[in-house]
Image 1 (spheres, rainbow, N blue to C red):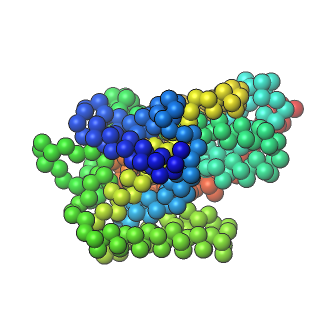
Image 2 (cartoon, rainbow, N blue to C red):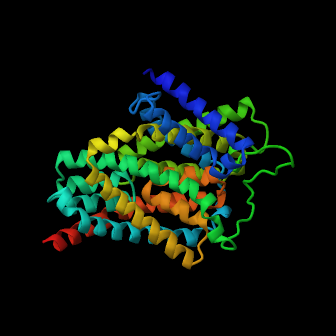
Image 3 (cartoon, rainbow, N blue to C red):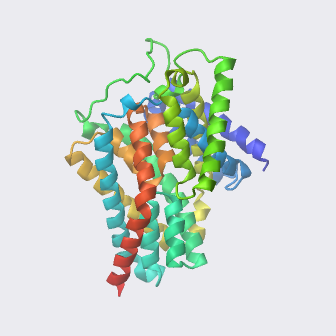
Length: 382
């Protein structure tokens, strides 16, 4: 299927999702991003969208980076102060939950997975603490067999998408249990709304003023330049990932009022990320679960389920608000881009930068935690 036709279908799905969010109370509760992911997944399983396409690769590469740059251009450091400490605690709970889940999965599935189960425990602890870069680093260091490594990556893709759907829906379904906890106040990023005018649930999906051609040219120049320069710096200093260079550069620029006040950045960035997430939904087809082997898939389910139970359970006891918990969970399981997408779609501008920050922290500590759990699981299995 032509990549252009795939993009046409994805943009149509995103448009329909936003249209439904504006007009249906149920759709507004779920959010247009979750709707786009679900519709794309259904379309892929019915054969209307391919499971692999160059369009998905482009959206997951330069597309995500441009989306990140555009959204971060609207971030003011003053919006971070309130959400920061709670986000760090929530992230720590998520790491502990992931590690515990890996050990539980090792205990129950070591016979079904085989002698390399302990390696799988380390890889999944790494990736659900930081991201895919940690899974690759831990897997290569532990010399995981190519067959198991491929199965682990495929199962991770499916489970990550499923958990993303859960996190997008959590604020709607768990809100009664969090009533009175962490009431959120409007921030400078949120636009005012008039009664009777339909608006999306996210302030990032609306521009504060009309977008001009000058704004679009400035946004294109800044975002493309930042993405290009971050790639160059990552080649010169590979110790720091490209996304970290990009984040630092754009955040510094965003503190200049002349840059932050350019209209349209957050709404364009949110649209790009929504396309990316819709593409993820299309790639998580049911056939992949069967192909990778159910034991490996069950392993990921146990790890992520334990992560969620500990994060949300203990987080509720500590009276951490639901928005912080869901963004932190996506920082763990999906990485900074997923945390940003959730904060954007759910209307948590004060949690955007803390979510990205702990997501980057996950990259830094993911390898250490992964190696530690792998060693513990290996010693445990004897």
